[in-house]
Image (cartoon, rainbow, N blue to C red; front, side, top):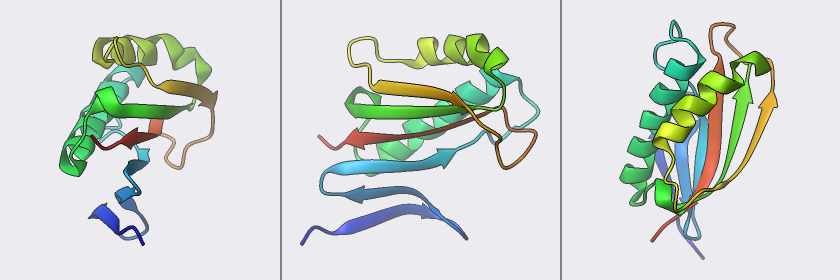
Length: 117
């Protein structure tokens, strides 16, 4: 049976769960909700990098990412931060949808799955 490892546990969730060679990221939101969508995305992607590093992997091993935008009009700003961060040689599968987020100040939420080396 494969072990399950939980990283950065909080009251209602865990920041990431590792199982069977995969890292499952919880929904990540910006630490600074006063930023615009581009700033929030950059903030979140920094958190993704930190979680993946703690798990023992990195963004080059991302399999898929799901992006939730509070307003699709923020797509261009989110994509600017995404494009600056993305490993161009190892792009994950990605979906982007508009969704009402739990906090009205959040513009972006991201989740994803990565493989361990």
